[in-house]
Image 1 (tube, rainbow, N blue to C red):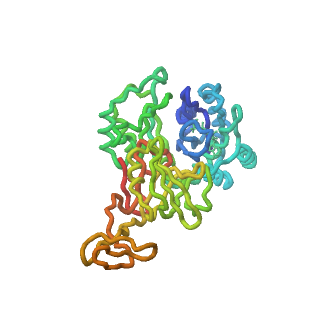
Image 2 (image 1 turned 90 degrees about the vertical axis):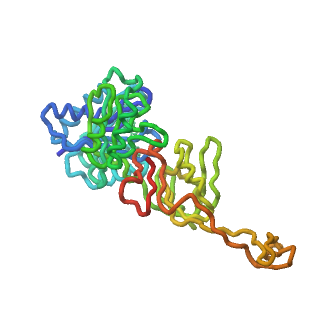
Image 3 (image 1 turned 180 degrees about the horizontal axis):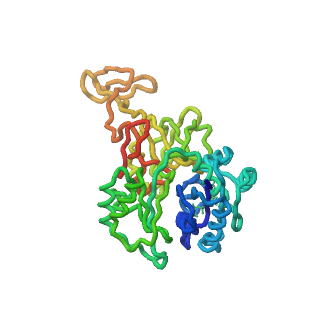
Length: 419
Ligand code: ATP
């Protein structure tokens, strides 16, 4: 079998989408009598600055031979990719299975690190893979990574993408809002992130120009397809079902703060050391420390109601934060409450006369000015907390493609999923 990797055919303004190109390549191979066994959509490191939107790369598993697969893709990319956009630099790689261990490793690293073109080209050459590149060929990084990651990852989810008729691209999408919400309710939680109920937003419908009408995500291929069939909309031109690493958290790795670097994504456990603060633009900041360093974290304004969860944290809470780090700050995708501060010290009330006591000076304890009663320390009282133990997440409207929704299984603490 051959695995064909594709990347970077897309343009932010003019609209195209590598998933569409991959679907077209698959159809062309199919028409020539070749079988497609898997169509995979891989989300690579979301911190890559050259990405158009979601840093997607595609892997097509086919019984076409590598030369045929490569030529088919080259012709389609030549006619479909937005090559006059300076940021569009397509790459294609065709690999015969089994995939080399070094390429598998490259695929894993591409989800968590920043890699370079020369390394990709070296791996392609060492493995003896056929490849083609356009312009600066940056897309070869993602194309090779898609092949490696497709051979390596274990947790797969599904996305059913419906595409628009080409003459409608760039015009407002005509999709019936009620039918999307009704279908989303019917198939939740196997299908997730179809809508954001809190924001009343159909998040399955993209805002950007381009061929996608909507994309339905979930854990089972037949369920995402069934949900899509319930949506009333303008005519669907074509559709494709992708196996993906979306919603898997495979970008995250655990680390102490001293090892945290920019452009990577982590889970880090520590204590809140500064109270949450809302700054200009509505972004909410909170800082944690773990004994090896301190890490500022932020919930950006678009994370909406999630910011209230962050604002509810208090100094002393022990939490695990998850997200990508940039400029030394972790952009929160989710956090888990491990220990909540449930009590606090307050100025004591006099046990004799019931009046409020006064400080008797630094380290001198407290005295009652009325009856002279003295005590060494503050009184301890319980605090009402709005948070509970477990994971909190951004709402669907702010979800990153690769971030795992809490409604999926496999978290190490209770979950408080957003719908
Ligand atoms: P498209 O729909 O075109 O794929 P996108 O948002 O997925 O849009 P790209 O246009 O593909 O973004 O741009 C991402 C670029 O970054 C590609 O050229 C890809 O090869 C490269 N890339 C992907 N992962 C990495 C990585 N880990 N390190 C460095 N470059 C990467």
